[in-house]
Image (cartoon, rainbow, N blue to C red; front, side):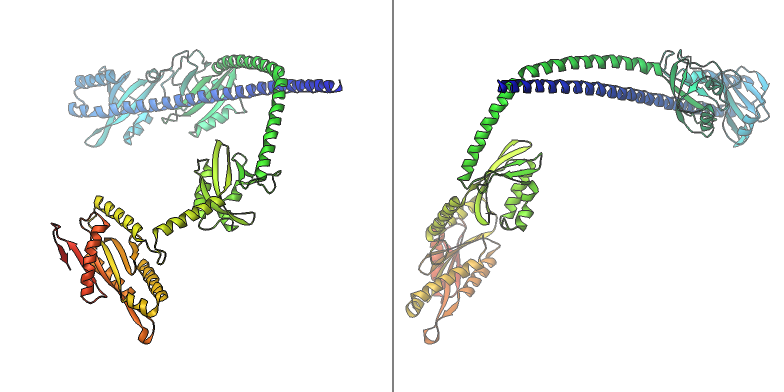
Length: 631
C-alpha cells in the first residue's frame, strides 16, 4: 500500500512539474512575442525611414539635375542669338519662344548688362536685379529664390559675344513643374516639402497628411511638439550650416518622422516626411496576426501537455525497461572486454572526448580529450614509432573530420608493451563514432611467416638475389611491359660467370667459395638501381637485367663498373686466387622472353671468355633479326 501511495505521489509531482513548466513556457512565449513585436515595429520604422531617405535623395538629385538641364538649355541657345544679332527683334523673340515652349519656361528673355531686355513675346522692358547682374558680370550662372508668394524661380546664364560677357539669357520656371515629376500621390504616407534659404516653402506637396498652414517652415514648426528635446532653433542652425538631420514631431495626437538634407542650390532644403499612423495601422495588423498565432500555439501547447500527461507514465515504464536492457548489454560488453585483448572506444565530437574501454580496468572507462591521442603527442610520448607516424597522422585527420577510415594496422605501445593493433571505425552520426583496436599480433606473426616463406621461395638462399625461377618471371614481366610501352631507351640482360671460381673453390675451400658468392651478390645489388633486377642462376652464374639505360654508352659504363667491383683477390701468398667476371650482354630489341635474351647473352659470354676474361661483350640483333651483330 505504501509503495502504491509513493508511486501516486511521484505521479502527482511529475504532473505538477509539467504544469509549472507549461506556465513558464507560456510566459516565455508571451514575452518573446512582445519583444519580437517591438523589434518588428522598429524594423518597419527603419525600413520606411530608409524609403524616406531614398525619396529625399531622389528629390534632391532630380531637382538638381533638372535645374542643371535648364541652365544647359539656356547656355546652349546663345549661339542662335550670336548668329541673328540683337537688332532682329522678331527673330530673337521667335527663338526665345521656341526655348520657352521646348523646355517649359514660363517666360524667357535676353538682356544686356544694362538691363535692357526682350522676352519671348517681343516685349521690351528694363530689368532691375542687382544680384543676378553681379553674378552674370562675373561669368557665373544665377538661380533666385521663389518670387513673392509664387513657386516661380529665375534662372540666368551669361551671354557671350567676342568671348566677353555681353548680357544674359534668363527664364522663369515653376518649381511645381519639377515636383510633378516625382511619383508621389496626394494620399501617400510619404511626402516632401522644398524650402528656400529664408525658410519659405518653394513647393506645396498637396498631400492630405500635411499639416502645413503657414508659408514659412520655421513658423510652422513652432506649432508642433518635437520629440527627444530637439528645438526649432537647433534644426534651423543645422540647416544654416548646410548639414542634414532627422526628427519626430506630433500635432493633435498625430506623429510624423522627418528627414532633411540640403538640395545643393542656394542653401535650399528638402524635408521628407513619413506618416506615423501608417506604421501604426500596419503594426496593428501584424499584432493581430501575431496574437492569433500566439493563441494557436498556446492551445497546441496545452493539448501537447495533456498528451504528455497521458502518456508520460507509459514512457517512463518504457525508459526504465530500456535502461535495464542497456545496463544488461553494458555488463555483457564489460564481460567480453575483460576476456579479450581488443580495445573498444567511442568518439564524442560534441564534447571533444574519446572514451576507451580497457580490459585492465573494465568498470571505469578512460575518458580523455581527443587531442590527447593527437599524432604529435603519441610520438613525443613514444607510443608510436616514427615509421608509423605518417599513417597514424592521416588516419587521425580523417577521424577528426568524421570521414570513413578503412581498417589499418599500427604498431602501438599500450600498457608499456608494443603490440600490433588493427583500427576499425564506424560512423554513428555527425557527432559520434565507435570503433575498436583489434589485437593483431597473431595475424602479424602469421603474415611475417608467410612473407618470409614467400621471400625464401623467390630468392637464392646464399646470396639473397632472385633465384632462377623468380628472376625469369620478373624479367618476362618487364619485357612485356616495355614491349607494350616503348620509350626509346635501352634495356639489356647481363650474363656473368666468375673467372677462376672453381680454382678458388678447390684451393681455398667451399666456405671461401660461399663467401665469394655472397660478396659478389652484395656488390651487384649495391651498384644497380631499384628498377633493375639481379639474380643467381646457379653455381657462379649470375644475371642482371638493366632497364631503360640512356644509351649504349650507359650500358658500357655499367658493365665496366661490374667488372671493376667484382675483381678481387682471395687467400694469401701462393694460395691467392683473383676472382673477376666475364660478362655477356644481350641488348633487348624484339625478343619475346628471358630465354631468347639468355641465348644471345650466352653467346656474348663465350666471346668475352675467348678474348681473355675479365671483360664484357655486347650483342644485339640486326633490324631484320636474322643475324647477331657483335660489338
